[in-house]
Image (cartoon, rainbow, N blue to C red; front, side, top):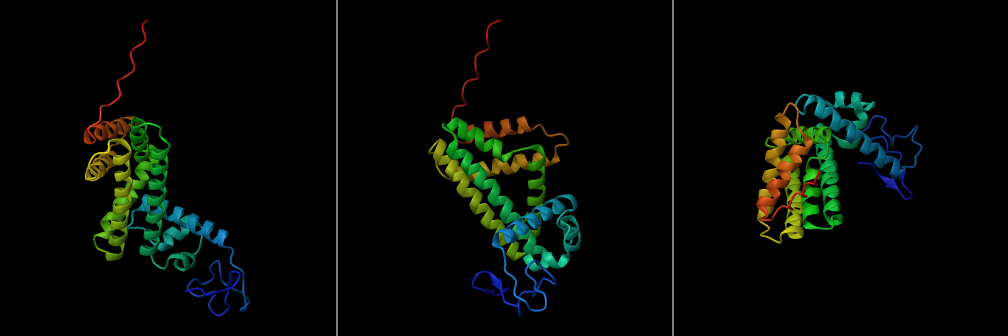
Length: 232
């Protein structure tokens, strides 16, 4: 645990603990000022590197040494910031789940009509081919690991609650129907996501359309009529 003096100064006797030369270590006991913005940026960069390493190598196979190599830092830096591989995975999932749910909520609130909100929701669940593949690959690794790790299962349940609140918001902003339908919306997205991962050549537009059609059915809404064909 780092000890900070007023003004963001690291106490000399504890500054280098846990990191073996991490970003807040000191030289010969001289206190060094911590820049909180640089600390956040460094942590964000490490989490992004870990995310890509887990996607490429799988959670079971990846090690802190490999993640450190991917990030271009020492293993001690990762231990300093996250403690263990499990702590790093938890931080990675918190960041990317928060990013996805925040982007989806923002899109829902900016969309002017219920139809626009449904389309925005579907597009954010299947954002790009590569980002969708990366996220759900890492997420399923995380889900499998959490079944054997109570601390990760706690985070998994927090993720489920966060996405459920987002799905409830969609129900209320569109149909005003029973909030219990939010569970069905998540089942729709999760099912399509698993299919997406097994698809050798997924068509992003098709998955968005399947998601959108399912949303209309679950929410008992009529899809907008297709525009009439222009006469020749």
